[in-house]
Image (cartoon, rainbow, N blue to C red; front, side):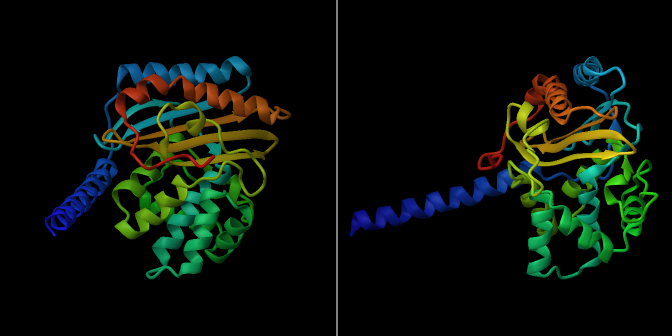
Length: 293
């Protein structure tokens, strides 16, 4: 009986410890940033500049923008061409998801399932359905206005959601909103979906490039983008890197017509790898979160 009593006490203590550690883990990456101030970190700025140079070394006609934001310290650490506008490709799915949550007081299970599929597998069919249901370009106008995204514009042709234009700075602000502003349940819905990103997207594209491929610690959550707009190839990588130094990392690229996808993807991964030393120094991976391979 004494052994049984001791065992019960030990189990209870372990359970309490698990709860405490879980709460600490949540607090590690939760942020209360009301705004983000420009406080450049020289080492991060140099790394971001190197990242852009890597892209330029592959093609003189390629364009890249890099943004690194410390969401624990509410500081923009590096911004290289932060206002350069790019076709968003699948990054607009973040705006679609946020708009659905903003307009839906009680999110049904089926809507949750579709949002998760759209974000984790970058499913275009779900994105198109939600885009149409939400009024298409009005989704971008509403969300950009609400979040203060000054460089984000809806597409000229209403049905082409991937032609929405955005900037690296605006994508960083989207991540800040997700981390700092969303109520817990909605925050968890989006972050869990982004953290569960599959190796292969619904259209067969390999999503394992850039942030998840190049940074040493597993990212907390990622959203990738790829496509061809106005003849140019766009390949983007973005994500949250977890721990007590939660960072948002954004790498946007645009390539000349005819650029081989594999070349652009490898270059984005190489560019992101230039950020790895400074990112690793400012973040630590959260236990239990792993990229789905």
